Image 1 (cartoon, rainbow, N blue to C red):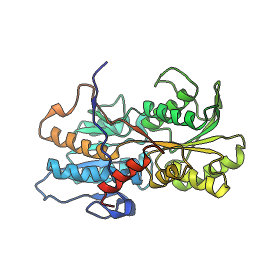
Image 2 (tube, helix red, strand yellow):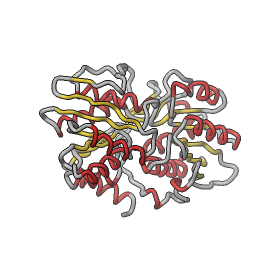
Image 3 (cartoon, rainbow, N blue to C red):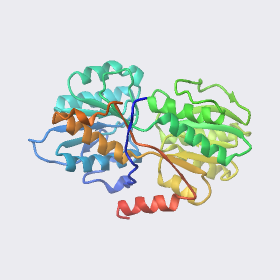
Image 4 (cartoon, one colour):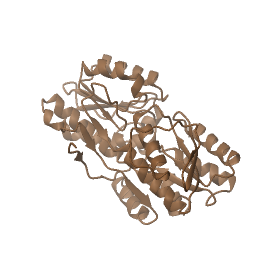
Length: 347
């Protein structure tokens, strides 16, 4: 097996509305430059898969990378989480003269032609979600299948005797979504690891202790996520746990549970470090969450792109994968984790 380059987690939190040296991207349709270093400095782009607080943390990493590696960074967050909108953004960036691109593909299978075409013109890497089988140079992110299994371990802690579980996620077209979801399922059904497995989302999956009732998607829309969570609470009276696998899913589920008077009765398990999720862990309403390191996604992406533009191909490891590991946050370590986040954001 090829040796992976691992980056130790750097805990950084940025409040969406506080900004990172410029206007908040949440208030813009396509994003903004995170700084200005003059027209003689080359511009690289960091494109996300949607607007989310998660990506504002990554933007902070881009900003620090811009200062450290001497490039101009253009961060773009699609207002609509679609491959069509993402294509429009990258084509606009190409017209604007970017020299390198880091992108989190929304629908990797159907974006191969786009990725390969762009990769012929400029250095192109993926972050957060990969595009395997394309000409991208490398991937920066975590092992989503392993992170999914870690989430499944939290479900087992919440329901030691087993139970009925519903999964919630933005979409399944993304490479990271498929692996993350499958990791949860395989862990709960006590299957051996096999990241190539894919269970249809509409099927009820039964194991010895756990039953997966289904997987509900919302196409990256928090309001839809909340509505589907509320509908699931009303429809699946046998449901014992709800698992939110995108950053905004756990807060949406929390709100639905709170309004239904079901907090604590139906267990909540999260993903990513949304402040609502962390507070729910502190209050005993969420068992735990598996967090990524979006700051490092941004910082490492800019480091690699800047190195490539300077002719330093050593920034790409042999594995073509920089592994930025996930970690569990529970009641035992949430105070320490959150305190570091607040200290690093100056709060």
